[in-house]
Image (cartoon, one colour):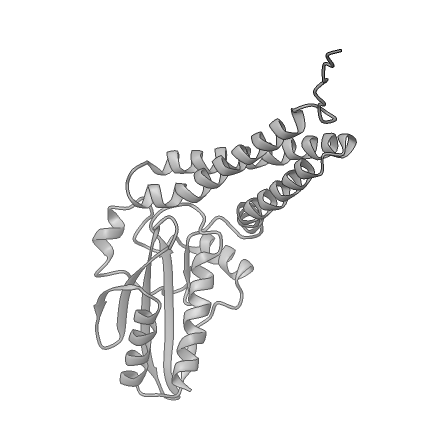
Length: 255
């Protein structure tokens, strides 16, 4: 007597595996879009608007991966499909880590004013001279925006102030040049009391211009600094952080 063997099917059918695979595909797509947006723009392969669209779509894809993974996890637990549950859990963790950076950036943007030109001297800001033409060709202005920006800066970044160091102007200038070069800035001009340079962000390659001005006083040398983005209404705190880090590094170098 012939016996017909009935094939056994796992509980829940193929859906847990299919959904887990879909979650992984969405996560991979999110990583490619979010990680590739900056380098693609920096390499002039796409426009800035297209790069931001890639970022936005990457966030949507990561969110979709989380949603599908949650469904997969619930279904896998009901069907006792532990491999699919593990895959879904790993996708949720990876997507959350991926979304943390844009979430942190968005949070920072809500906390700081929409300004892009920061200086230690809002009454008489160091002027761009060697970089003036480059800034005229960019969307943001060459001149300091004025009192409205100064008021917002003082409220948001009260710690941004000049420093006074007890060294000769020549020593301070050499230290400032060394610190600028160590930061990877592209120096445009150096005079006896003035340094102009351009800092380029790593991911998108945005260019921010920097001026360092030295003023000799009876009790030392006052160092003023200005950092201004060429593009964008808000720098999300980047220029203020750059000034604070540079002046701290300069003081440490001179001690």
